[in-house]
Image 1 (cartoon, one colour):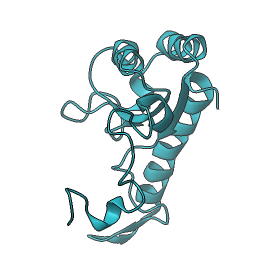
Image 2: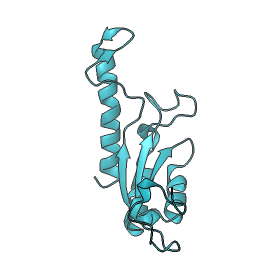
Image 3: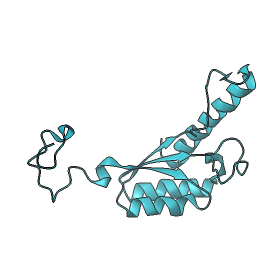
Length: 139
């Protein structure tokens, strides 16, 4: 290390320290949907300056089954429409990420082996994210 720089900083030694290389609008952020109003939470990310927002659900199964976990299914059609309009008006790109709890899409469960029910429920979670994306993320 020389003068506060590490090997990973190579090429940036003379960068103007007052100007960031990238803005939040260029990089974006991930937004995990939690209990409450998804639209209000999205507004907060937009007001922070994010231009690209990945919305992810952290729940699995039917809405309200998890402890404080939300699914895309829990966001009603009016909120989905409002999310799409808010993104369009603010020129924000929204993408979606299916729940992290969706397991192996082949149906393999490490505890019990292959299961068609396990496979179906995981694929259904992916479909929920796709449906949400089509309605709220214009995609």
